[in-house]
Image (cartoon, rainbow, N blue to C red):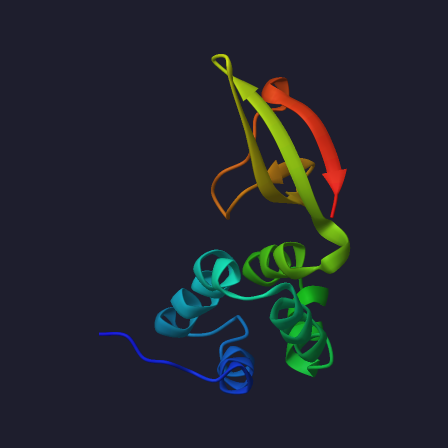
Length: 123
């Protein structure tokens, strides 16, 4: 079952789910990083990122190097967005990506192998 949620309500929900949290909230937080990022506009992403960066719990989780928060931060940071051109088996493709641990990721678990990257552009 799907529900429509206002972007402001989503921001408040995200705030309640800043790691470390119980598993259900952690699952929502990971969905923010992967699933819901794709559904938001550039402006909505920027507002969520800006709002959370003012939150003391978020700042503390960054300081404590909580991996889920660091991943979220890398994914939503407007200065960490790239367009990656790839050539693989004779096919060319373009991907939105973010830099995480010196690799260009398209989601939490998938990075683009360096040998297939033909061009990197900052968004």
